Image (cartoon, rainbow, N blue to C red; front, top):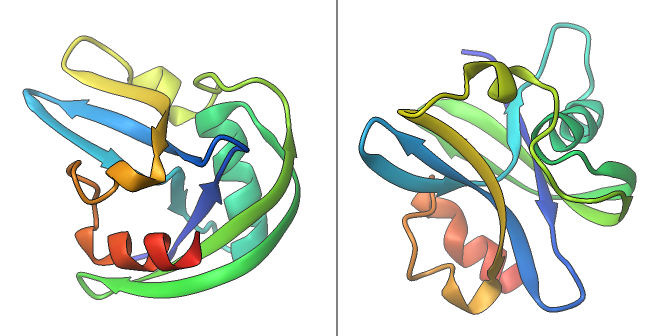
Length: 131
């Protein structure tokens, strides 16, 4: 399985940008991110995925932590600065969007992370510690 790269985006109000996923009738939350393409650096994948999923242009980032999820390496990058307005980008998520498969970028207060179904759940404590 290809490794993943994810973008940890926080605003000045103390909220983190997550993707609310509705798949069939299951609702869960994920950090914007996806597979690292062949020849792509993890940080470049985080920048690309942030744009594809949130329409934000990342201008500065730093590696925050790595995680292993079901045998797959995940790279998490804290986004230091970005430009633009949040909205679902023109990536694959837009193409796959329909009534039973929804992708919605939403700001969530960091204090709510342990109250929502954030996947993988192993990153919740790491995010709270980070911020």
